[in-house]
Image (cartoon, one colour):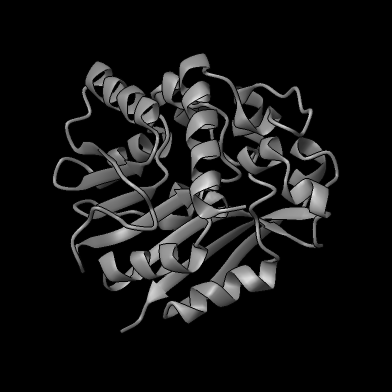
Length: 250
């Protein structure tokens, strides 16, 4: 499938999700879990879910803000920010002296996230329409990047990691929760548009994914591997949610 076709499918599916407030993890997996149930399963607290409830759309596979150990005054970038859930959690942690930027390629998600920020008074959060393969962000300007179950959707993942490396300051870190495969998919599964939008068809084998991050220049530390998610959300497909911290060392 061409990269342009993949991106068109993703934009369409996530535009529909933004309008319907539905959960992407039901797409192509047959899973009936609610967005609140999913958020609990992947590591969010009750207090976090209450912060901006409209922003929790049950789209993630982990809690990257918990990995990041954010500090006051830091500049944070969220790759694939959706309705802004992780951005708002990060905004609380970095405080008024910090800033959070969310980048998403779906216009309806940007509109929804911006409306959420306005409704709840988040003045230290900004949302930008853009492609994570070509970030609309300056070089060496970000302390921490977070991303939650999004990079698997990008056709050119190496380009995403290189862009992340470019915009991070020296010593900055990339904190990711993402779906990776433990076994190759069938050709039929790889062509399934619902599985593509459901974070499966575009995913890489775990070692291939990690090697791309290293190739971009990062030092990688695996923090956790959630294999249970295969049964709870993905009908037993051989995959896991990989939690990593990647540091820009040069």
